[in-house]
Length: 302
Image 1 (cartoon, rainbow, N blue to C red):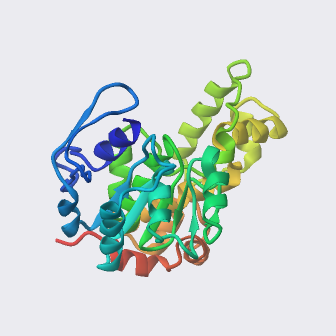
Image 2 (image 1 turned 180 degrees about the vertical axis):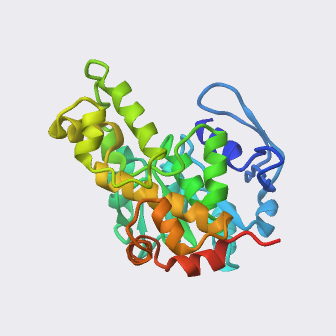
Image 3 (image 1 turned 90 degrees about the vertical axis):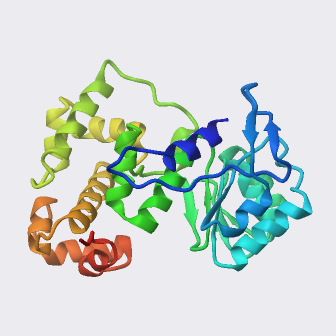
């Protein structure tokens, strides 16, 4: 039920300011489908509904160890063959593996079942620590709440950061999480209110991206030593302050490129890079294209 809720929330209605999607839940046998929380989901569409879909997401189920029936596997292969994006959340990855769509590719699933996936399908390179793996027309995601990361990544990739950020804000979620599944194997323990101090500092950072923001300054604002701050930061976010800040700067730069006509030099200044050249270097390294090419691809038009 969590997976159904994640997909229907991300691709559901978010108000007039954000575009909607034509979303349908499908099954090989339409009708009531039991869920793990005891409330059945009424499925009205069969596999024929998949024929015109641009995106298919295979959701996890309790019987994932048994391959889906031939009709489901054929529908997945047919969708991929005609150019649709085929994705999977959590152990839904096993369905894509059974269809042969992951052969020779990298993939991920819930960390608890990554070894099983690798044992059953040695032709797949399983990356158990990743929140999601993007192989172009095939995208796989980790388990549970990582379904949000998968869906938001698909929104960002196809429609740009502004839309993904808007949907994330509507759901009160971060639009992007650094780190991988390893950070969630054991929950960090709060230490004397330091989590609240850290959250306050991160909120302050978002309002001061145009400043240099060295780690020593962030630690001072959190009233911690630099070493304690770095340790606390990693426990809370799964990444380093430097990597988190870089992601935040680039995400904000994406949004400004999409939604404003500001020169790249001014955008670089607003997100805290010393020059347009530095922003371009980071953008090419992390996004694969220079800022101006990104703007041409995603900028809003009249």
